[in-house]
Image 1 (cartoon, rainbow, N blue to C red):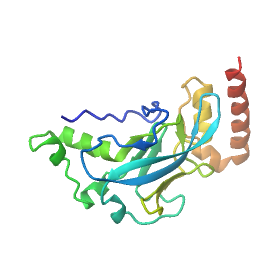
Image 2: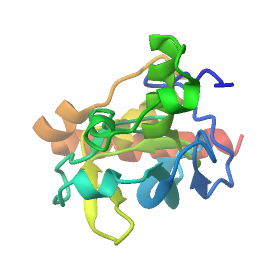
Image 3: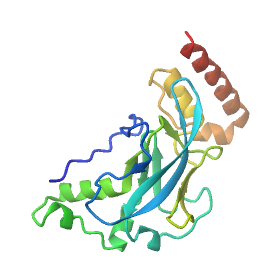
Amino acid sequence: MVVPFRIGDIFRPSRAAPDARVLNNMPGCYPVEDWYACYWTVSEDGTLREYAVTLQLPQGYAAVCEPVRVGQAGCVLRVRRWGVSCRISILEAIAFDPAAIAGPDASDEALMEICFAATQFDLPGGFVIADPDYPFLLFDPKGTLKGSSVDGISLLGALAFFASGGRVASDFQRLRREAPSLYRRAVAELTDLLKALSQM
């Protein structure tokens, strides 16, 4: 029986266990290969932390993904607060068959849920960010960079979200590009504010 897999919105919290190190939404359902995700998170007190975890993608995924440079998306579709979405389209290229898991009479919705579960991962560590200063990096089993993101939610986006109690939900990437000095000042001020609030 397939358990429904729901992604949710961009700013929802991660559902991953804080101590998770190997992530697979459907363990034992299909052959996998171990990929390595390196990324940064922000906690509610504004603390930055670097993480490295293993993502178990369907076997064959690495063979059809080309190497990339940092900043090129490659097999990474997008990075959200909760984690990462890898490209579902690659499943077709590797002949991944969700019907073999769900059964021949499964609905289209059930088949899509399996595809989402195979390629989208909640990540541990808090608020996952991805910007040029703190890129999200995804390495294949041989250690080759095959996916990255620098245009997810920025450090300022995470800080503003926490400082506003969730009322400000923006990636702030345009501000970072067009007004870098203002961006840096806002990061410094919100970091100080969150530290002060955490000590009250």
